[in-house]
Structure formats: structure tokens, C-alpha cells
Length: 204
Image (cartoon, rainbow, N blue to C red; front, top):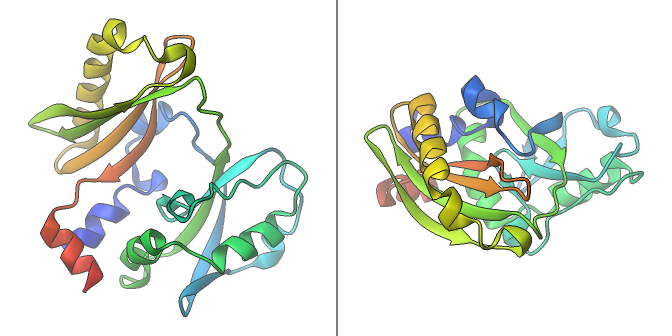
């Protein structure tokens, strides 16, 4: 298997180590198998999703949401999951088309995973580049009531990043941590640390 594809597949929520999954802010609550159809995707079993959404949910195709396309693709409570997913899957973003090659080109089952929608207006995010050999803070997006919390929580963030590095093991990872209004820290997302060579391989 291409090393770049292997890196992406390891960030699928189902493949993450249990200690990492346990501290996810919004883990998937529903998953539906999908298949490629030209430059779009379809549900393998549409009937499985043919019911109202139990709450506001945010879908990801593989490991990528529709955010890069200018929308979160939120499926609000009571809306038909089948109708909304079929609409979204007809219009994948470029990032989704590229990242899903890790599944389609390795014959790995692909899923659209739905997580509980979270309002981030009072949740700040801090991004770390994580390797087993060390961690480094990359960026921060400060919001609402937690915007001033970073200095006081910095040591705890570093500790959380270090523990995450130990759980993830070998490799390079880009991990987003969320600071919640109650002071707790949760993992928002885990992305592969792709090299320029990896990106060129995926685009090839």
C-alpha cells in the first residue's frame, strides 16, 4: 500500500487508538457505507439512512468534512438523512476527492460518518504537530469565552499533546485540540502529517 494512503487511513476514527477516541469532542454516532461513482459517491444501502436525523449531525466523507466547500453540510434534527447525504455525496470537495483515494485505490471500505454538531463559538482550538519524538504548537484559533484561557491552560495542553503522541505512536500527525468553557480539553480532529512527496503521490 502507498505510504501516503496508509497515513490517511490511520486517521479514520475507527482506526485511532482507544485512548485517543475516548477524548474526542464529537465522535461519530452513525456511519453509512458509501461507494465511488465517477467524481461523486453514493450510499451502498440508501434505505439504511432513510430516516429522520435524531439530532443536528455533521458528516465526514472518510476523514474530510464539506467545510472546504464552504459549508459544514449540517443535517439538522428531523431532516431526512438519506436525502441530505445523497445531495452532499453528489458534490464532494476537492479535498474529499483526493483523500478518499486512500480508500478507493486500496479497496478499503469507505464510510460517511456522522458526528453530533458542536457550536464552536465558545470553543478555542489549538493545533499541534505531533511526533513520537516531540510536539510543537502550530497555530491557535481563539473564540468567545475561552479566548483568554490559552496562557493558563498551556501546560495542560502540552501534556495532552504529549499523551496523544504516545498513543498515536510512530508517524507524524496534525492534531486539533479544543478548549471548552468548563476548562476541559478534547481532541477535535486528527490529521496525517503529510510530506510534499506524500501529497504528490496522492495527486498522481
